[in-house]
Image (cartoon, rainbow, N blue to C red; front, side, top):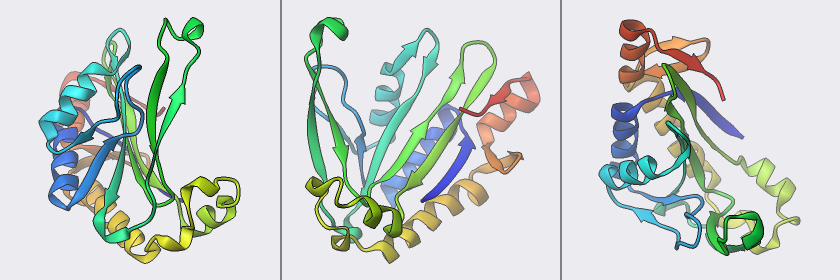
Length: 193
């Protein structure tokens, strides 16, 4: 399973999303809002507006996106999740998007106080997907995905984050430009999720 942890704030998130969209990805929110349809985004401002909505705790925003590139094929499943209204403030459903070769981008960002929480990029490997394919037959065959192309696309996103958009590192995790400025100039702390 390929993965990369990094630190990003608003300007950085916009740059990552612009790169992803300019590279031909379809960008979904991984989980819809309660009682809402699943959204697909076509611009960084759309993603940013959705990110601002995802206020899990006062002053804490986070968002999980799923990326699909047209060159990798494979089955993508949009699944309805039925909720228990008594346990979810009256909400009855939400949706999620799933598939063996989807890539995931989880954006953390500025948390309450002067804390920047980590962001994460990752996806299944072919080996991991094959191990689990009989547990999730609804996802279809893992062989329907172009795993060499997924690896190539993954390297491209990771290269962009590590080498083009980062200004420093915290351990092995890239700190993107705007997040680095906040850390260096205003004393923001970096927090790994």
